[in-house]
Length: 287
Image 1 (cartoon, rainbow, N blue to C red):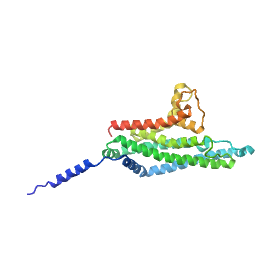
Image 2 (image 1 turned 90 degrees about the vertical axis):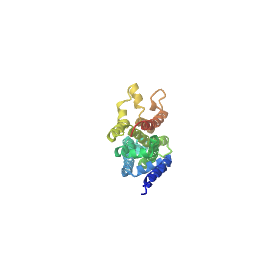
Image 3 (image 1 turned 180 degrees about the vertical axis):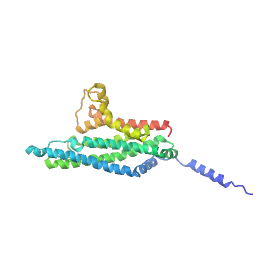
Image 4 (image 1 turned 180 degrees about the horizontal axis):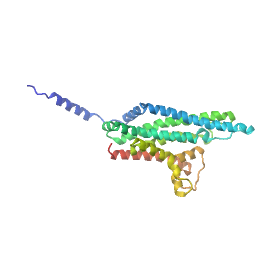
């Protein structure tokens, strides 16, 4: 009787082929993360709604000033300068920051809650590379969204104000800084949310932590005493407000975002620290 040896040989051949398979390249990880992101309908709808909401809030803020300028007489025909909070109203942009942070966190938390993260780590043992790929895709997506929203907000607001001869061009002093700061606020907060998602991993706790960090923490440290002011001025929202309002520098202050350069430093350090911590933690922790 002939012994059955074909099955073990097949298994052995399969194992050898699997062992010989090259590791995933970083561009393959980017492609995989982009497929995961665009396959979620909720992400598309959320981005569409937040875009309409923020641009709509800019239109409403500009319309309020339009009505206020109605009784200004001949002076209303003279340019009144750039009105930053008409183009970039705080309510709209704080909502954008919160949504970006939430979606950034969900890119990680959704995999933990569904168990997909186990499949991901089996396919790609280099967990740090997976996190970096998520960060690159998240940053690219929200940079595009932030740019579209910031540009749209500015154009809509100025179109409304032009009816009272109060609109300004995109080359007007202060506009470029405000536009750039508002556009980058989305990817900055999305990367912060991603980092929080890796650290916390649980949906509800991650959402609460993101909201607390981005919106509530600055309110707990008022700008009235020295050490709370240091914390307050190191928050992303405070840095955004300084950049949008084009506040002048305060050379005598040691607070981080009390200067324009300090505000840009806040924009750089928050997402950088969040991503670095996420990579370090994911390398040392079980799934």
